[in-house]
Image (cartoon, rainbow, N blue to C red; front, side, top):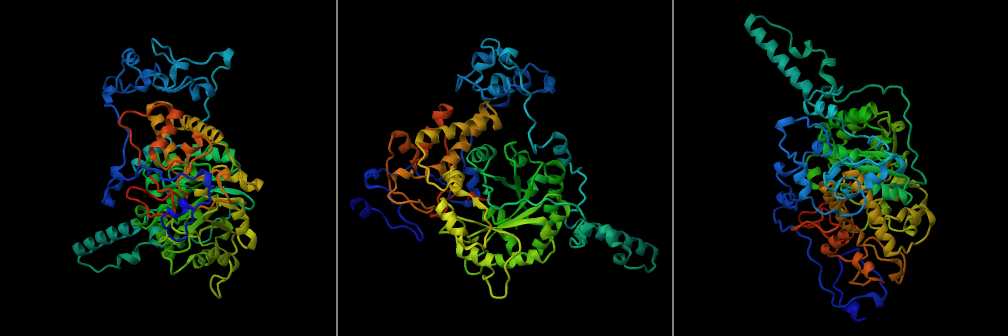
Length: 596
């Protein structure tokens, strides 16, 4: 009773988690604030701590480390002095290298922070596994990777796109009109208007408002989402190593993080990395965001020609200001003409189907998702669309308060607005699913799709797909949760590399994930089940020291967990979460929303 009396009032739609009294901690110290100290939101991302990097002259050339000839020769600005590097090489972070154990060879050589298992300690020569121990196994080529040739084409604007840029046809027409007008003035003779002398076909799709005509007759294999667990696109934290964890726990369908079409079209390496697919992802899609139909179409040409995908998800729900201010994400919901252009454009280019992810509407007072769905179905492209993904919140709401599943059900059953029929395509609901009981209650009505779409619930409880499929609450021990993080680190070193830069990436992505994982409350500590997404726990202790550490809201404790797995952090290391992991508070400066 004393503990409950000391609790401050909670925001709307938020409850105290029913933790057993013996685990509640009174007078607990407040966690270290997760704030960048940036008052001006325009500079919030510039304030994020970054890993310190050595000057180029002090960094080793990778070709030299691996014993290869440097293609830059004497103009290379990196060091080639391997003996000097070995003399001051930092102590390894662990006894075994993930990549060497997998393939018998590590392509980081002496730069590997776990290199003692595959380099000569004196000379630094990179060793290969002997035939008696299994030899060298060729590393599989990455799926959906950006090749150097394609990147060069995109950066030099040399890629042979079939879709014209929006406005290019008008510019060409204006230029031709000007030339003809100049010619007319010189000859002093009347001529026909330039507009009538310019054939419409030469203006390209941009000038004809994407009037694409009949769609080509080609097979499109739709993805069956029914009775499957689908992991939604999750910005930053929905990376490839995380999705591999989700596959281990029973996820059926995965999707890459939101990729901005403009960045993909410019050949940005970091953006193309979001499209990479692991062989274990048997049903895989990517999510793209843009403000204009021509950007979607040109990006679709790249995906069609250079990526292996089962579907493409169109983002019409991202509430982040940086996305919305450009006319993408949730802003598209208010532009039906743009929706028409992107749907017709994508379905004309892709041989894989598309899905459309949206929110209830722009603001809380006017839900419009049902109107958008009926508009899309009127475009006669339904045979190339798998489903509508509907998040039960508005853009104004972002991730505060609870998801409106009543509206999702009303759209699926055709009762959202009198005279508006139910969409023919499946509607996959999304928002706050955190237990098998909640999911079964949502699908009782029978109108929505039987696909269970998980987002932040999977970040907080990555074993949630198993709970849903087996219809149980899993009281997973802290030691097993630590093993799960070990797997993530292993997958991360394989994906981002085992050199210092790769280790830094793995650590930061791990810390981003821990900013969500700490919200899980072990089943054995709760008086009543299930835990709900917005339940806020009072300060509590676990059943052992590790469980208590994993429940900490203090970012410094998350760093301690990373040190258990990746060794000590560098001097001066700082961490500021990119995302605000709780949906019951207003995001602080320097944070973003997690879901794409």
